[in-house]
Every structure is written in structure tokens, then in C-alpha cells.
Length: 283
Length: 121
Image (cartoon, rainbow over all chains, first blue to last red; front, side, top):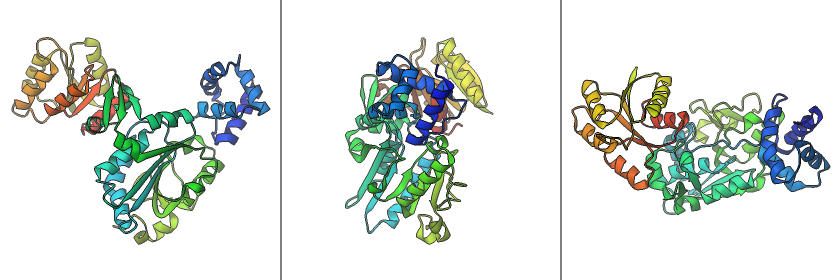
């Protein structure tokens, strides 16, 4: 058990480090998620962990605490509809809009163990991309080094591959290794994974045509959400699309982005919405 | 209300699967093997079949081949739910006319996603 004061410190620490807005009723969550970290770090109690974090002397431990508190829940083609919208609508329109540039950049910003980024890569491959002369970049980033390591390996359990993944995709894109399934070399090489804390500067990543940042903002407090949306908008192409989780919205947090009236879960620059012919909306 | 036929020689699995299907607003019929399942299909063709592979009397693979040859037997969506997790088995099932494939153990979310995939829910 941690004391009230220790929990208060943890809440402030996590908010500052990752933007995580841990409610006062979530003490059990902090305890259950940080206990394995205590064990791994050879610390006798959660109180000892808090004292170490307070001292600020072990940056690795601080990062590990942030990662331990992050939610890594993910699955292939999670919620289905956004991926259908990408496949049938947004990506074909962007391909047409980039017919001269012949380059598309897609970012799975809270990629966890990679299922979302690989789902996009499957769609892209099924669309016949990259066609000759095209460059398609798919970047997956996550705050957790171990999640990124798993994403790079592209190996998943039976349970993980069948959560959301149609069986034809399993047959087409995976090879079996005992009870695990490994994504094809073609898809693995189509996606790059990097460790990244979205609270830190990501301007150096360049501009993206599609950004998926799903089921992250729900864990953030309002000012952190606003800042994140504003910064995502800065790296979103003027005619690009931002995809959020089904229960997330930019409404009330930023006016730079607005909801796509036709495509649920997608958001675009307010300037593009005002001039549809300049956005991927243009048919 | 859609009709699901749950075919498995394990009463426990049938119970779990029926509960999931009923939770998705479907009515259910149970069969303990492929032959019972064929009789059930002759009485009333279901909208979806949840199908085990290894069963006594007639296995799921033989049932599927027979079902697809029956009048109206191409209509039901067939989702294999089996411990057979070899890629060759999956390919064989799909070739024989299965629409989806679930490897045991599975949970409600996995099953629901597979049923969405085949358009049943």
C-alpha cells in the first residue's frame, strides 16, 4: 500500500512526465502496475520506489515507471471502421492528391506493440502500394521501449493475432512459429518503429499525411490534450487526416482541427474543412 | 433474430459459445457432432455456424463439406472454433468453405470481432 502523500506524488510525477491524468480513485491501478517494477528493480516496497523517483537520481527507473503506467491495450484493425475508411476513402484520395509527389507518410503515434501500424501496412499493400516510383513511409512510435522492441520483432501469440485480424490476413501476412505468428518480412520492412514520448518534441519527424493517435488522449488532462492536438496539427499535412479513438474528440480542446463531418473518428485542419477542395475531402 | 448453430462435443464450450451468441441477440441451437449438425440444418438452415473440428461420428471438416453441398447450404456463415491451430488446417478449412477461423481459447471480444468480420453482427 502507498500513503496518500506518496500517491499524490505519483499523480503529479506521471502528469508531468507523460501527461497521464490518474484520477484520485486510481490508487489501486498505480499499485498493481508499479508492483512488478518494484520487484524487477529489487525494491522492497512501493514507498521505496516513490522515494527513488522523488530523488530524481535514476532516470531509467523514472522512464520505467511511466511505461509501467501506460495502457498498452491494442489489437489488429481495432474498431474496424477507421481502417475501412482509410482503405476505401482516405488513402485512395490521398494517393490521387499525391500523384505527382508520389510519397505518402503515415504515423501510428501510440503504436504500442505494433498491431495498428501493421494493420495500416496490410491495407497499403493490398492497395498495390508502393507502386513503381512511390515511397510509402509508415512510422510507429511508442513511449515503451519493450513495446517497440516487440513491434519490431512482429511476433504475436495466437490470442493476439486473432483479436481483430481476419483469418485471410493471417494466412496472407504471417508465418507460424510454434504457437506464435510472425509478420511477413515484407510488412516488417514496410514499418519503422521508434521509441518516442509524445510529450516531448516530435517536430523533427516531418509532416504526415495520416496520423493515427488513438486511445491515448482519453488518459490525458485537458491542457495536455490541447497541447498534443496543437502539436499533432503542426505535423499534419494541410490536406491530411488525424484519426482518434472512437471516444475521443478535438472538440473543446483546439480550433486548429475539426471533426470530419463525413468520416467518424477522423479530424482535419479547420482551414481544409473550410476549403474542401484543398483537403482529402475533395473527390 | 438471427439463428446460430453451435457445434461442439464439449458441453462446456457449447454453453460458453451459446452465451456469447445470445449476448449478441441471437437464438441458438446446439449439436454435439457433425451429423447432428447436418440434421439441424435440414430442419432449419442457420445464419451462422460455430464449428468445432475434432468431434466423434462426423468431424467439423466433413460437416462443412456436406453442408456446402446441401440445398441452401452455401448461405450460412461458418466460423471454425477449434484447437487445431496449424496453418495448414486453417488453409484447408478456408478452402472447404469456412468464412472465419477462431483458435481456442477465445474470448467474447475475439468471437464478436470474427462475427463482425463475416457480417453476422
